[in-house]
Image (tube, rainbow, N blue to C red):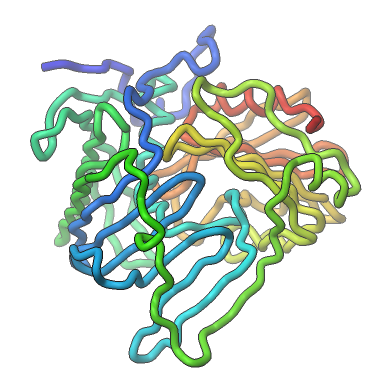
Length: 356
């Protein structure tokens, strides 16, 4: 059996790999997915998803593309379709980067980002196998109990495409409960038509929100900020900037919004197909980071200390939390996140330089 032997997890999940060069860990995609359709079988039923760079996304209930989506994200606007007891929702000028942003497409990233970061760090074993007749990597990891959701401890097994690193199958087993999700891809790297990302049906008075994010070049964003936004000058191979911009105020972040909204948000997203690295900055104000901005209520993650450009930082990652690092320098708060281990995210963070 083919193996990509990269160590074992447990308490060593966050142990350092001394002497390793940044971005030297495996695996990397051999086929970068710039767009796809995927048929999902979930505990709640069948879904048909469409995704295309730089971040267009739509979901339909059932397997037919003739049905209108019930969730669509395109061009900075998110639409959620109406239900019998819900008039639908429209969010405009949405945030682009985590921890401020949320996308329904994250169902393809959880817990993939966490697993890839561990594998690239050398603390997780990926076993060569097949899933649905496709070459795959398989790995298993424990699941902590979640008292908020009434879930007991258990374990999960994940299968990833060996070529694209997209999820193929996820099985979660807890005491008295087993859930299975499968992902079947089609039209990978096809030019998906605009109809794939049509507007869902809305009620007469849908909920409306304006998050206030302006998609602009870094230079244009810098003209609106009292600090010089910074961009990474070192990235893993194949990543290029997909989106950037600014907002007068950030979102609330952290578990239960423990970090209040901050002034003058800058954000940039770098992509290698579906994989993403997010970079954000914002004014610290009087409080700084009061809690991990990526944290969630009753969501477990591994955490450890780090150092970025000579100042203290924190690294965290979990099955439901993207690997990330956050810190404060002077009057600015920073975050860098993506499917990479601490050493790689620190290398990206250390390379930040004022945008040209």
